[in-house]
Length: 383
Image (cartoon, rainbow, N blue to C red; front, side, top):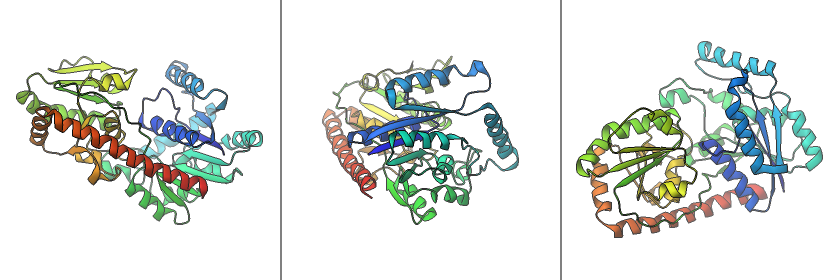
């Protein structure tokens, strides 16, 4: 089948969860024998000096997709309108966006032009605000990759963030014949919002990377710099890490990814900030234990799955297990009690056999999840 993915988020460099999710979906669909194209909706910053990072992202994304890359560029007038709506929603609507506030008007013309050339069987858009596209194209099968649920998200996390009301999100979902969710609770929610749509729970795609036991007292944390990750790291450093240092004086916390930028200029004992990571496998190989201390946010728990995929002993705040595949079978330690983290480390760092057992469970767990996700995609392609 010929498939077109439409997104405001580039796929490369894959430094954020949404980019990872889009790329994982594309690669999964390719592996099933489909021909996948990518249409990037580019919103240029109004000031030229702010466009550098975006242009680098476009270059990297083009290099990956080659002749299957397409681009729609939002005009300056429409960009001004989006900015106006952003501030209007912020100050007069409690950050509750309407369904089409961020829709890139005109993209439907390019999609129809591309469809005339490539004759797509499927069109997948990313996020609720792209759903309007389906009212103006004739591609037979349409789907939305939700990434998250946005209705009353401000209440869920106790912060003023981009969100919608349930009726707004329902309008978006009911435009789509097929809906991709990333966890059980969200799948059930979207099915209620759009009873006539078919909903699939795709979690994510994670290859298993077996790694040897390092035998040290290193803990690794690879993360983007969004506020939820920052808050989680702050909790770990203030509540958990001091107790671990007291019990294991040679402990080292190794931090990689863009979250490193938030620790610039800080000198924290036993913490090593490594910055951008070229090869995650090399980063993860530095220790046997990986953490995901995030205690707020919604959507897919990517860092939890990634830690398992790189064969780590995975320790998380209970929030970072919410909505994962079969949590009762997951080889994960979860606790909000700092002293329990120390007690668990005493067990695993003192027993290589237990670490080896967890590694075996990592592979079994990922294999079962992959089989489930494959069935969901096969169901989508055959429906």
